Length: 224
Ligand code: ATP
Ligand code: PRP
Ligand code: MG
Image 1 (cartoon, protein in one colour):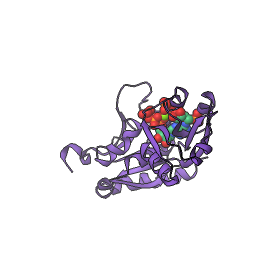
Image 2 (cartoon, protein in one colour; image 1 turned 60 degrees about the horizontal axis):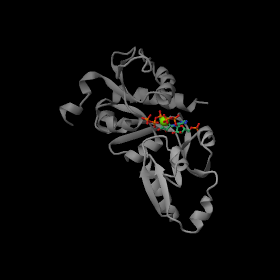
Image 3 (tube, protein in one colour; image 1 turned 90 degrees about the vertical axis):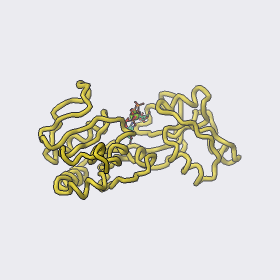
Image 4 (cartoon, helix red, strand yellow; image 1 turned 45 degrees about the vertical axis):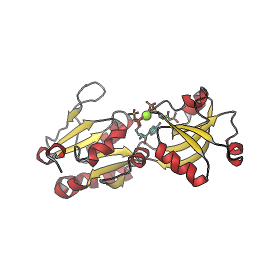
């Protein structure tokens, strides 16, 4: 590990994304006796302090959490299964399904589009998604030919303006699909967020990490 990617001298570093993952991780941290003392929604700081001088929190994009942890710039983090499947999970130990930020990965199309028929006829589909790896695997396993269009957000817009026939995106309440006159035609998998730990940190900092991992595990089984 290079000096640039080593965090051994500075206690534990946790990578989180703002929004639902940060909010849903706070109770798990509290179960481990850790309270984040700064609010990422009001502060522009990207390294947040906690009540424990030995634990700091990095605020990164959701899809960057596995990268920070893989390279050891953070010792541990919380990331969605969707994000982990795209990243590949290299260098990451994934000890706990935290049962937070739960949703599903689905295929959706314009309300008027006969997806089943298009699939039956062997049509080549244009699919817009942020999750190209998952989408490629899903359609390959069904033997459906697709042209994937990589997007970084607002996937629901793509079928509305003719950019794609279908999207692969996460769905929770279904409100976003309904608001855009789209229908869910296939569920690919259930999604939740996992604790991810740098494999080297787990060995070098096991004494500090293990109690936190155990507290997260215990608290996550108590989630509603
Ligand atoms: P960015 O804002 O950087 O583009 P993002 O949209 O993936 O990233 P979030 O919306 O905070 O970031 O999502 C974080 C994780 O929460 C996702 O990886 C997914 O696992 C889960 N998630 C996404 N949308 C929902 C939702 N509507 N309900 C529940 N969980 C969700
Ligand atoms: C996510 C996702 C969907 C929506 C699904 O967006 O990208 O658009 O949630 O949830 P629903 O089924 O409950 O409507 P998010 O709220 O994260 O906004 P974003 O576009 O900023 O990622
Ligand atoms: Mg989002």
